[in-house]
Amino acid sequence: LGVSKDADGEVIKKQYKKLAVQWHPDKNRENAEEATVKFQAISEAYSVLSDPDKRQRYDRGELDDDDFDYDDFLRHFSDHFGDIGM
Image 1 (cartoon, rainbow, N blue to C red):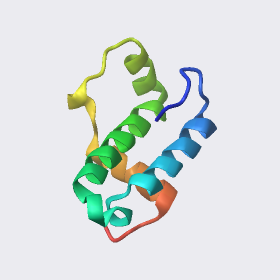
Image 2 (cartoon, rainbow, N blue to C red):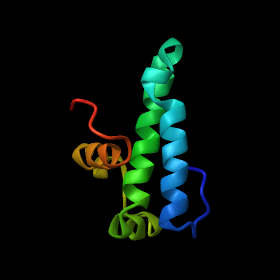
Image 3 (cartoon, rainbow, N blue to C red):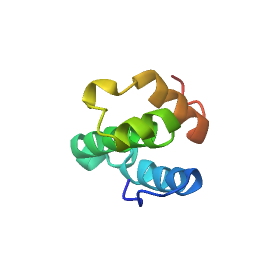
Image 4 (cartoon, helix red, strand yellow):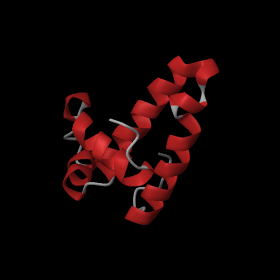
């Protein structure tokens, strides 16, 4: 997300919203493939950084790609952008 290691929850949330809107595939139809990859990475980063337990595990180097929880991502996305029919 491009935030400092000591960024608090509000900074993380603000940066997530900014990047999620910027890279949402619906806003980047001409470059949907790249936007989808970036959007997924942004969402995964937010899922980790917004959860204190996951963030501690990430800081200790204990998380990998298998730890991404898609349901958790959808929950966070809906919290910030509303229900989009999922």
